[in-house]
Amino acid sequence: MSDLETLIPPGVELVIGGEALTIKPLKVGQLPAFLRAIAPAIQELTSPEIDWLRLFGERGDDLLSAIAIAVGRPRTWLDELAADDAILLAAKVIEVNADFFTRTVIPKLDRVFAPLNRAPLPAAGSTPSSS
Image 1 (cartoon, rainbow, N blue to C red):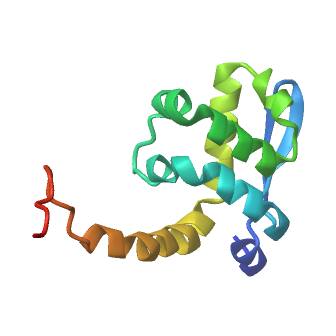
Image 2: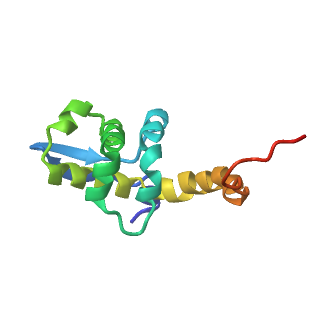
Image 3: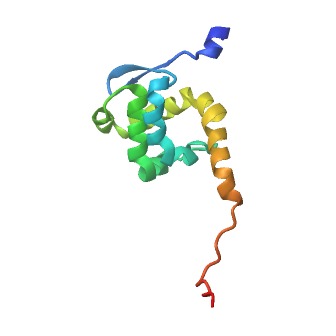
């Protein structure tokens, strides 16, 4: 791999739904909408073993919206794909952008949620009234 390919990874070629696609790293203009769409699923996407069927079952709409943004296709196009094509496409988008997620998104999310992880939880039950 050349220095340029390390800096700017090449796209991944695949055929999905009968169309040849090149999956490339996200462009800065795609990031706001992509991150809003993917945020509810980010926890599952950072685990070492992704359970794609469970993820689609629980966060499928969010994931499909994010994938549509990443590949520049309308969401309706993705909705018509076979399940195995949709899962392959989602996996490739995450794979191509994994470096961005591991170096940028996850550390920032960890910093955002760190104070919440340290905050004590309120005690269960009723709160005594002050007299």
